[in-house]
Amino acid sequence: MLYTRIGRRGQITLPREVRRRINVQEGDRIVFVLDSGQVTIKPVPRSLLDLRGSVKVDGEQDFDAIRKEVTARRAKRGSDDEN
Image (cartoon, rainbow, N blue to C red; front, side):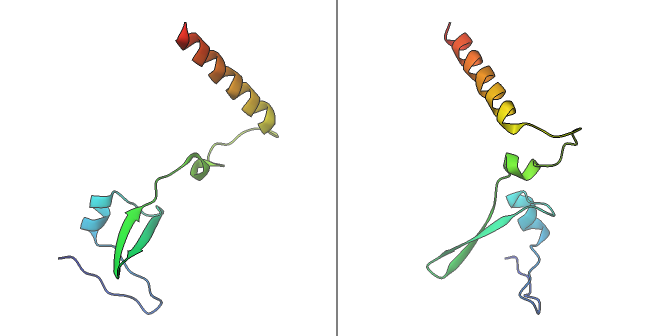
């Protein structure tokens, strides 16, 4: 059985074995699921939004134009796959 203490501000530290088993690291998000008096801790999967701003670009970006281009390329790729 693994245990930890609750700090004065309600903070806890996840034991190393728990972090390894649920594959979380510093900065990752977790969710507490409450069910019938029990708590389950689950990792929150990363999304593309988590990576927003991580790539440096020069100048302003026209996201509408980028979305249209991506949609057009995906549509073309999809039609190419059907042939």
